[in-house]
Image (cartoon, rainbow, N blue to C red):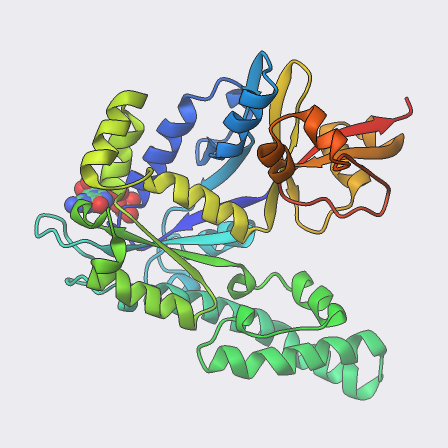
Length: 366
Ligand code: GDP
């Protein structure tokens, strides 16, 4: 499954955030923990639609879908030159599907900052420089060989790769990430096979002070991160990691009281999970009407038989059709019977692109 890696300079709140994630996940009843690595945190994806479906079509059990974070410890300045755990660190990032970069955006004289001052943009640039250098190395390792093949043998694949390298190199050299470029389908395949670090989607998590929880945009440090993200084809959220860790230990009613007092509508962790999920192109469909109301994760762009295969490979192999109701229709019309009589129960075939919020009953041959 797809995972988002958590990175950041020392002392910015990574472990604190990862603890909050792990504690939130520890409450989950349905996850086989034995199979999980210590640096992987699994959380339920918060989704209000589940409760709504359950209210309309009650089932014995409600099962949310899940999402995995990976804790990637150890980046320091000079990582791409093998400082600290540098190379190992970059290899670990290479194996994730998106990068979550935690940035310190809170003042606290008791907590040392590695560079001596709280400057989120400088911190981001320190890390991004390491990623860019690593990608440039990736290019330089291949450049001469591919160039030679392209110019001498006129081999088609070599020419195609050479053109891609030529396009990316100056962009990296100017300090911009690979994801700032757009590629056609053929180029995309080549880029994908080169596993660039700066091609991965990026989410900046500004670790703000608890006082800024209600409205992170009031924090100048948050603003600085948000402005940077906008120029960097990246996303941003603000949360207070230490407070999130405390919230994740509270029972539901304490949690509600605390959030109300803090003026926040939900834990920042929920926002983090949802944003990371979307950043990876993940979407949710539901199964309902039996013993379980259940949310499942699929990737945007998947067709009905492939999505059926997420439930069981037999469903994909013997796919006949997908009886589909959209959540919005069920929610507005209030019952499955009403959806049917309004003609909004759809029978979708092999080519159907599954949509976020679809409630599906797969028909298949065994
Ligand atoms: P890491 O090195 O990035 O994993 O950072 P840690 O999670 O260990 O945090 C470093 C220190 O900062 C610890 O003493 C934390 O308790 C503290 N810390 C983390 N998040 C916050 C926060 O949101 N506010 C404040 N005031 N302190 C925090």
